[in-house]
Image 1 (cartoon, rainbow, N blue to C red):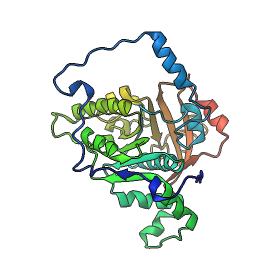
Image 2 (cartoon, rainbow, N blue to C red):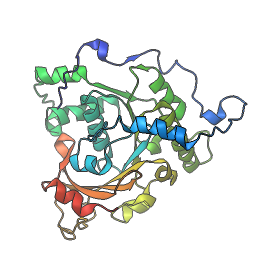
Image 3 (cartoon, one colour):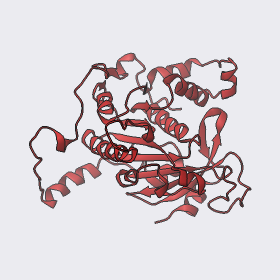
Image 4 (tube, helix red, strand yellow):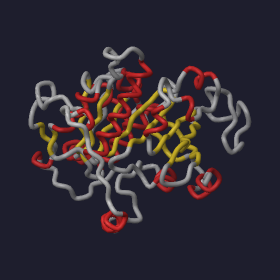
Length: 332
């Protein structure tokens, strides 16, 4: 948990300039604004190179938007503004936990993070966060046993710029409204999860999701925000064991638009062996998970072993050396 010396006064926290339910006009992708057709704009490579050099010089050896899992940050160098990261898993196998854990870590570092939950309600998510941050066993909360929250932790809750929204964000205009009404500007948007978006105006869920992710990519680029999009694994992937890119549920375009695709896998559920055969078939511990970087447009792919602490809604590195975990898994 970071302290970072940030001002904990309410003036540093995000505020809404208008209600997203009644605020800014519906967002349209650039090519659909008005009736005028967009015109192509060419640039000389020398002009692009000058701009690129200045941009590269702002980068550092540490990721600007880290996931908070060391081996994953070493492989990916964290999230990138203007790009989409897909986090995929079977139903009820950790995608919300990983997304919320990442959102909390980024907010604790001082970033403004908007978490749009399309499935759970906001109180359920914050209850998970309470278990994660105290830490406190989730079954005790279900029994009415509330933990003592330290003064330091309460000050962190007051400082972090993590906003949770439910019952809104089911289509691209609603997501755009959410981003546009918040000040300071959002750094990261988390959408949990893709298969819950509205499809009323389209003839199929596949087409609805395809159009949504294409527009989301355009929006992320135009607003310079990083997007985490949680996704389910399709039925074929649920039956075939270790998932791959073609198992993204209902939409192959998820793979196309994403800069990063991360897939969680629980080998014990499928009685499978570990990716490195450290554990044989049917021998994987119950708390052993694998996080696979299935697509990485700016770096290597690989698989990272994790330990899932269910009662605290937390993923931690599996107790092996980070160098060993990454070195054994990297595919160039």
